[in-house]
Amino acid sequence: MKPFSILVVDDEKIQRESLAGFLAKRGFQVFKSENVEQALDLVRQNTIDLILTDVKMSGASGYDLLQAVKELNPQITVIIMTAYGNVEEAVAAMKNGAFDYLTKPLDLDEVELLINRAFQLKQLTEENEQLRQKLSEKHRFTNIISTSPLMEEALNLAARTANSKAAVLIEGESGTGKELIARAIHYASPRRDKPLVVVNCAAISENLIESELFGHEKGAFTGAIQTRAGRVEEADGGTLFLDEVGDIPLSVQVKLLRFLQFGEFQRVGSNQQRKVNVRLIAATNRNLLQMIKDNKFREDFYYRLNVVNIKVPPLRKRKEDIPLLVDHFIKKYAAENGKIIKGISRKAMDLLMKYDYPGNVRELENMMEHAVVLSRTEIIDVEDLPIQMQTLKTSDAIPPLDYYHGKFRQKVEAFEKDLILDALQKADYNQSEAARQLGLSERNLRYKMAKYGISKR
Image 1: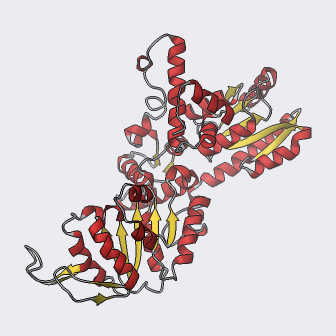
Image 2: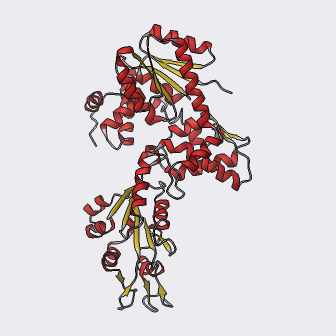
Image 3: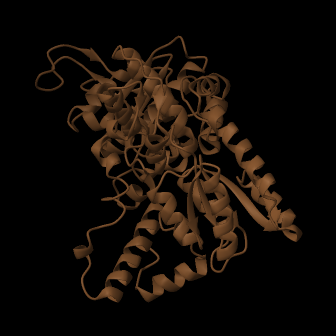
């Protein structure tokens, strides 16, 4: 088995080299860094299990490193090293995710004892049996797997609204599980024994969506050879889920607005008012408020839909869920394909934790199906993952040198500008968040943005 890897971060060379040498003699794979920026580079390029970091260093502090590492990969264990007089600050760091702290001057026996304790706990949590217990014990709203505080907040809101009749608008990127939450609300509600009717509004042409929703009379239009009830009538007594509601044309939004207000509608080609008892849930990955400004979405319809608003976080904002989801998908696709898969290597999991998942949970699920199908052993490794994951450390991290023009200084500045732009985009231009990702102070980030002419948006 590959030895556990430890990163020692200290700007005092004697301390750093002494501690690194002690750990190497005890069989650990050791990396060394003299500052936070260098440490984060090592974390991105290598599989790091544990970080021992000094608190006070020139530039960014050990606390800054702790915060950045927890955002990059929450599975990495961080131990703070601090002077005796700063113990209160170290305890505060533990509340923010540090495993424990050590006081300087270091007692090497205490260091070894604490590291061994950390790794014993890490090994236990990586066992599949422990993951199975987590799956059964952690809070799940029906079949949604999560331990993330952000996701738990969304699920708690969904659970609280389940017994009401209020309209619900679920917002989130594609692949985040909006339909799962809609289904969870329905099956936790008094309407659970009645139909849940799902309509993907983006998949229906603009000319047919009114008929699809409200039905039509025979002869109402070319091709209407018989009377047909719409999805609204099918959902009577139950729930109508409108997925991708932002794709509904304005003319149909007007009729849905009346339906929301009075529970009444007319089939296409009919003058008869029909009445049903339907609870409406809608979902979108689009910015409806911007669409209102662009006159592409009705403001009155938006506020009728948005009685309860549930925002589903993207997977990159709840990385602590990745190990649980990976375990779940491995079991699912191993069973479907008749394979015995006992787990996933630490290196493969490390890559999965560092990836940003533009396709969210759906993308992770596809990756794990791919890995299970192609795996030749009982442990999924890096070579079983899709090619974009295998090259994550190299081609995604550092562009070719000839990508940047000019002399050395110009290349460095161009690369630094690209790093800042990338961090700002990932943080939705939240400068505090971007600064944390980069391991910079917010003031330093603002200076560099001004230097390179990078706008706030």
